[in-house]
Image (cartoon, rainbow over all chains, first blue to last red; front, side, top):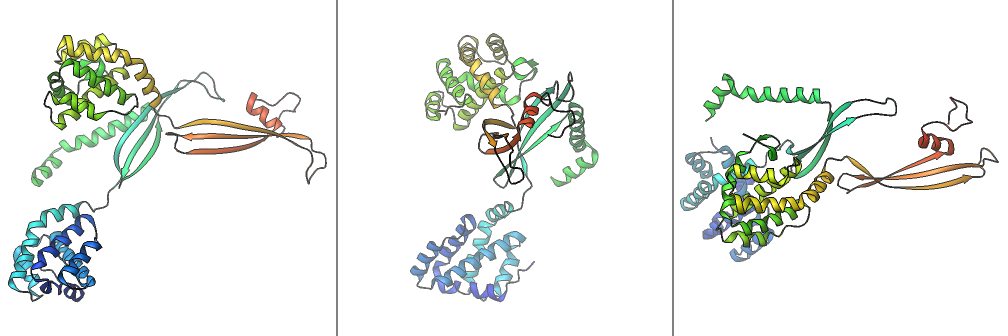
Length: 198
Length: 200
């Protein structure tokens, strides 16, 4: 599968031949940007060292970031990567260093990209309490058990809590349904799929 | 095999595994680490550096130190949760493989000293949805209004300060009641001398 680079992208990457030996430096900046976000001061110091304007360095780094993330996302092969960047008309040496940059960091970039997917709220903890209602304003001498639960959930570093209340019979039914759901994992259908995924 | 301190259930596998780590620490140091863990369970700050120093002799890795704190925390809080006396706890820990005289004995003595405060603390931490913080009140006497020249009626203002669970948010709920309505709130029935069914 070939990467199609837009004209704007190609223009941004056009500064790379001018960097000459400092392509490694720009590659490092691109990876740092992927790990930690943009670092304008680092770009400025690189611009001063190479005597190129800051904007061009910034575009070059962003162009590299996009090239690396798209290639890692699609997990394209070496041959496809080389063919995709051949369009840019760089020297063989530059092509080789870009390929090396891609291959060395592919796994790490994929793990970073994996964490960007949106997540549903996930379980954090559950507090519970068993109460028995003995009397109320309307009716004296009752026995009414109730289980009150506070479900703590995590969603993207936000903590929310949901308060639930149920009687013991419904709670037992809920537990039974959840156990049936877990039991489904042991059925042949699930077992076959799990075996094939390994 | 069922254990009282685990709530009459099987002992969790990870606790079984870490008992052997506990046996590696000398009993004197174990008692001091217990004291630190009890401080943490009672809500005071834990002094992790002291624990690191105490475990340095036994040459435990950092993962083992954390496991030790976790297993001691589990044993002590679970025993308090199920109201286990210290002798039963000692015999159950010995069944799990903790050496008798020094280790189990020392641990249970620390537990016995702090059993009541620990149970009080666990009771206070139990699930609670909201809590009444305070009530403020004021009684006014209305003399006159734009509707009626002579009103001469008392009016009660109440403000309930409701605390959210962790007492982070305090919400004020203001209520204004006429004197008769206030009697209904207080006594559950209308004051004598008011005809039944009168809207208050």
